[in-house]
Length: 216
Image 1 (cartoon, rainbow, N blue to C red):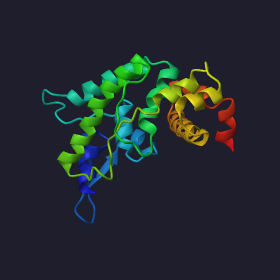
Image 2 (image 1 turned 90 degrees about the horizontal axis):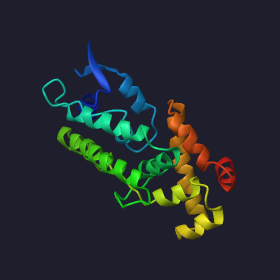
Image 3 (image 1 turned 45 degrees about the vertical axis):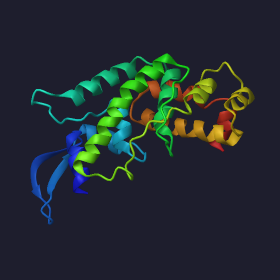
Image 4 (image 1 turned 120 degrees about the horizontal axis):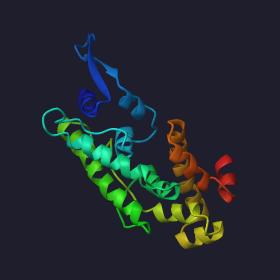
């Protein structure tokens, strides 16, 4: 618990506002706007996902001549803002995998690949922060997994029909549908958080045959 508190403090998700300590002698922290963004994410490791979306950054060293974490956050957020809805759908698939294997492979999109390279550094930062502060990294995984990006973009791109996408993926129809539904669910979360890019990306996925899967 205390280890997680230290990590959340590093990422400026909570702050000591002088509210004293609880009955166990632990400082009572207040949630920041960054912390609210993390709390509104449903994922195995919400902090990791928020960091890879450019919503939070490691504040260690800020104000001491470093500030590397905040610089990385701004750079990643800027690149994500430049993505098209199609590219964003592909990128979100790399964050949305519920059982990530931590595999980063080149996708068919050079833009997604470049953003993934930046996100990998951010992901490593979250992992290292957790290790340094004593968080169980097996329970709070920090993995990016790009194995679904191409199939997500094949469907979201609209140039292929459902059967063609499924056949090209080499997977069962239900497996493809589950991947797309998970990405759509994460995009819906981001949509609820005010991400306009997520609105357009989700529309590319929840259409045609996927509407039947998604709303059934």
